[in-house]
Each structure stands twice: as C-alpha cells, then as structure tokens.
Amino acid sequence: MSLPLYRISSLHTFSDEAIGTAVVALTGGNTPAAAVWPAANDALFIPFALAQSVLLKRLFVINGATASGNVDAGLYADDGTRIVSSGSTAQSGTSAPQFFDITDIIISPGRYYLAVAMDTTGGTLFRSNPSVIREQQIGMAKQASAFPLPATATFATVTALYLPCVGAEVTKVT
Image 1 (cartoon, rainbow, N blue to C red):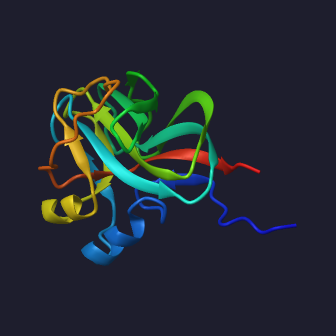
Image 2 (cartoon, one colour):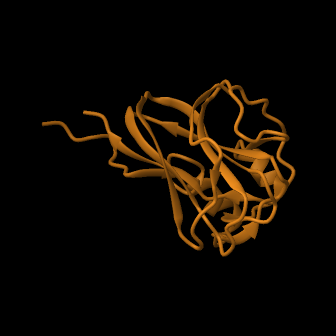
C-alpha cells in the first residue's frame, strides 16, 4: 500500500494548495472578516496548484453578515478556460458557507484558478485584505463585467484589497 501525496477535503483560498501559506507569510496572518464585494459584476480569480488528481464534488463561498444579490463560484484552467461554475445563484445564509452542487469532475495535476463573482456590492463574503501588490505577487487576477462567470476569462490586474474565501470540496482520486 502506498501513501497518498496528501489528503485534502477542500481546496480554498487559504489552503496550502492555493495561496494560503503565501498569504499568511506576506500579510502576517491577516484574519478573514466579512466585507462587501468590491465592485458589482466583477470576478476575482485565486490561483492554486495540484500535485495529484482530485475529484471535485462541490464549490463553496463563505458568506459574511449580509446575503444580497447573486453569486457565481467556479473553477478555471490556467489558460482562462472555465471548467465548471455554479451559475448565478441567490446568495443565501449569513456568516456561514454556501455550497453549490456541481457535476463531479476529476481535476488533473496542474495549475488552476478558483473564481467568484457577485452581481451586487450589497452582499458580503469573508475575505482577507492583503495589499494589492501582495495580491498581484501571489498571482490573483480579476475581470470586470464578468457576471455570471464567463466561458473564457480575460485576466486583468487586481485593484481591490479583497481576497475572498472561495473553495471546492474534493477527494483524492485512487
């Protein structure tokens, strides 16, 4: 019996597979807190890398104290091609995860982006707020007018202090 490279149950903004370790190192452990979405219809993309294949089961965001408008969570390939998204869904629940069922999909080792977009600035998500320069250094990207999430992302430079808590439930592929 061989041991797995690692066991994960979720990939998210602050997991080691994403940019979690870098965020903590660069921001001094900035604690996530609820904040309004930076600009209506904008999408934010958080990079992560996988060393082994995983089965993606569902997506999630961590809602803040106010649920308002609609949210779309997704997964993108390194080249900006959308692999899967939840589609426009009413933001529901406060100060708790909101899960989005998707068709299970196997993701191979490689580099990807978790994505989230909201159609309003009234809803809140939990987020960290490293400096814009730090967000750029860790490979974050954004796209304006990207709600719902587009089939192909046009990555642009991030401009807001907003690193959202977004993720995916996964299991190791055996």
